[in-house]
Length: 320
Image (cartoon, rainbow, N blue to C red):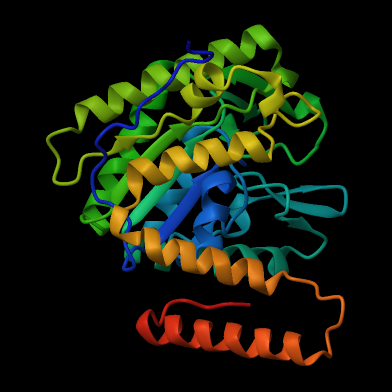
């Protein structure tokens, strides 16, 4: 007897191995996979310019980063005594305009370096709802908790989303043609928009995203879809897989998503290495009752030897 709908991993594309270099961008759900990849010591950069939720903001940032179009005074909005970069996450604000620009441009260069060198680029779309800044009539990446009267809420059309995803695939293919793009739709519901509005927004994301992916299947490295949304909405349609806010997946739900990603995207030959890294990570978090004991010192020495052996085989591995 089956108690839930099983989603089977589909053939993916370029699998992650020890040479993989990963950039993860988009909504906060990107951290579910990104943080686990980092746990297993893959070189990962995760949203170096902060979380972005809608595809036009993500597309704009990727194009800016790959062309190294630095932020300047024209991108800054001042309200009272604080400066804001509305294209970016709320962390990009402060009382000193030049400090703000310098920090954003340094992070932009970091993103450029990773996008041009990554073997895999994971992009998670969060919502199709976006806010237009009335003063410039431009969509923003984040409202920075500024007065709501400054903005007008818009639902992105399926064509707008398709075009944004298409722009991402084209600019990445031009700069880094060997990179594997992996898109997903975040299962985290934006209930502040309203449940009906959330469903409508997710439907637009799925429709526009798949239209763009299907249109690019003849490219050298076709973009792929990872069904994070479907895993949570269909296979794990039970609130025991959610945190107490009933919105975000809990540890158990995240682990199911990770195991699915592993089955679909990580080469089976990596299993012994991942098991050894996990064992070492557990050892590093061990809290002994008697830290000065001979037995614990022997344990630490053995752990150091295991780490040194792995690092000699895989120089990119860096243990804390």
